[in-house]
Length: 478
Image (cartoon, rainbow, N blue to C red):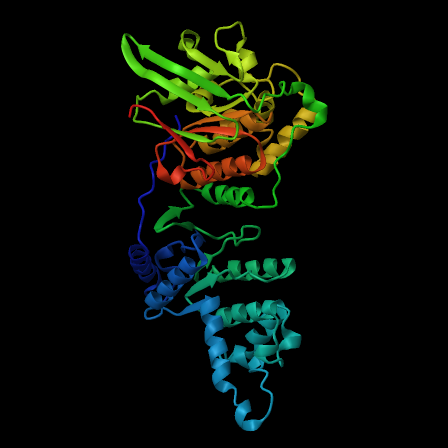
């Protein structure tokens, strides 16, 4: 049985900094970083605004530098060097153009080991620029200079704020190798919003969300970093979602009349064992109208959705029109399901048939739990495109049952969307997911609504799971 994770306890900046500094002190005291054979902690900081990350880095620098030898790669050190160069500029007096302190001198200010300076300059491709003034360096060379100064100072703690920014592909990998090497003797805290190349030594993840912090142990939860990569992948604005190709158009249902509501309910009554659950409800869903359905536990949210999907037999005793069909007028269940994409806990628990991830996604073309025919190459290609959008294409051949709860939920969303349904029903899609997987699901849903004509019906109890495009609310039990 899979463990359901509770929502994280938020921490303030001040509380986390104080706790982290105390932890650093315990690990770094005594003159040896790996005293008592303790493993080093290396922290990856992601999320939040740039100003908030900068403020947190500055707070850490202030709190740590009185106790430990700390170096920073980022705006704080760059600002210090710019101000230092301004003080050294005496061109007003000498009438000579000041191009800045030569790079070699800047590096020797933090290290008397000339051999180490020359070796690191060579590794970063700066040897031919050692005589060049600081002001003449390009933005990429300036970033390399910040990295070189920080490493040459031999700190116990390295605060790296977007250290790979402005570097070419080859140099980024070289810097990552240098950071991995540093982690053998020091503690790395790195802030970034890019996930293409990262050191492989991180033991903890610091997630910044609005005014909250969540500190995650990657040793205990190693899949969290990969989930973050997926979120970043989904939020990339250049990603286009796959369309149903013309060669599979025979799978698409007949087009709907845009002037007819997708759902129309009139004076709905639903009850069980003589007790009314929903009474006198009138509600219509117009194409392109995204709704959140709210209400206390037991108010009838899931029952309402099952009236639409046909999984509640009371749909036949009420005045309900779905996709132009009057329920109970002779329509088949497949006439209705072909317009619907569904993700719910009931579906996830019901999907217990054997099959690979690829087969689960393809089954969405046929609205079946399980795939009972051989999929062709076009269907497989389309399914792979959806898995690629999710960043989990490498899972295509794995059994669906072997996936984590969060990955299963993402695959079921791909299954729901592969046929481009008119109506997407998400009944608490983030239930039981941790922070990163919740963010990943919401990022995908928002991308879907931005790029398709899908209409969303969405159930959640949490404000932080809001979908940006949802502007209409139906509250049951009010």
